[in-house]
Amino acid sequence: MKEAIQINLDGFYVEPTLVADSVTGVFPIMGSEVESAEQQVLIGHTVAVEVPPGLYKPRWDFELAKWVEGMDQKEIDVLQNNVSTMTDTEVIGRELAQLKLKAMQQQNEIQALKNELVQAKHS
Image (cartoon, rainbow, N blue to C red):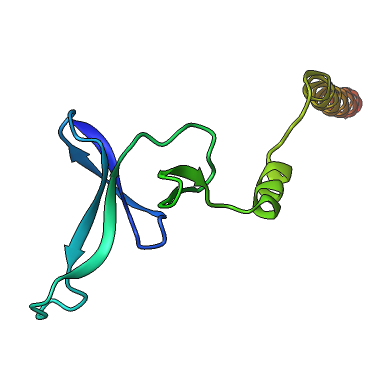
């Protein structure tokens, strides 16, 4: 068995399904829009063609008979800009700043303890 993708009429992913290993291609999914309806209508397709990696929102293109990017470039740019792209140097710099801050806090705690010790000796 292998995974196939059920798509809506616009070619977008709905859910995965299993098909025999030998099955390949695109097949209609017939159903009724209302449970009591007797007439079957086309409600989607099963696509037994592997989705290539790297697509943000795969869409089956019926004319080209292949998976294409279903997200426009503007949406992709927004996604890519939201992904943190810190370089190794930036990561090290952030860690160094956190360590310096921790060291300063520890120095403050040490000084506070020294002050308490001095006050305890004088009492």
